[in-house]
Amino acid sequence: EDQVTQSPEALRLQEGESSSLNCSYTVSGLRGLFWYRQDPGKGPEFLFTLYSAGEEKEKERLKATLTKKESFLHITAPKPEDSATYLCAVRGGANNLFFGTGTRLTVIP
Amino acid sequence: EAGVAQSPRYKIIEKRQSVAFWCNPISGHATLYWYQQILGQGPKLLIQFQNNGVVDDSQLPKDRFSAERLKGVDSTLKIQPAKLEDSAVYLCASRTPGGPYNEQFFGPGTRLTVL
Image (tube, rainbow over all chains, first blue to last red; front, side, top):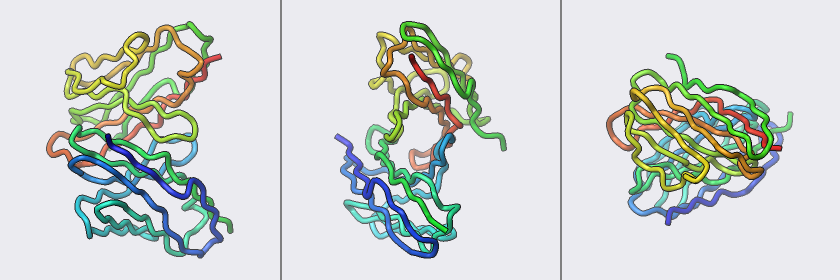
């Protein structure tokens, strides 16, 4: 059965304090690992797709990496506007997205 | 490009009442999904459509939930009768045709409160 575990559940950072979010997964036949950002009262917003171990993608202050068992979302020098819940999801053989419970990030000015 | 549209944005009903949600996907997106997101959790897939056919409804509580996608465009999700545990945000998402790797785009969701 597909499984996604995200840690930590919540993270508070000072502005400029870099950190990483973790997504551990178990899936049969990975067809992509997806990172989404969700702001309160809004739907998830797509950030990255990673397909194979060793792959990395960057967007502004965010960088996502993938191994065979986990993915990391690195946040460099975060700003208050990076505050959101970050969701990780995997697409396996069933061709549907299976989401983790998310990491709620708060960046304090 | 217009995003995924959903309505209403908020709905409050009493238990045992009925409710319906509407979704209009991004133009040209053949695949449409309905998710349920309970507070503090990630979205959970309820049903997937490919054009107007159901691909996966294994997680849909069929005794009370139903969904349709007439003409392969708009979709409606209905709950009848609602229970307290149905309180959640109902998200609609769509995806372009083609390979399985492309991302899904989500609408803003409908927040349902069952009293």
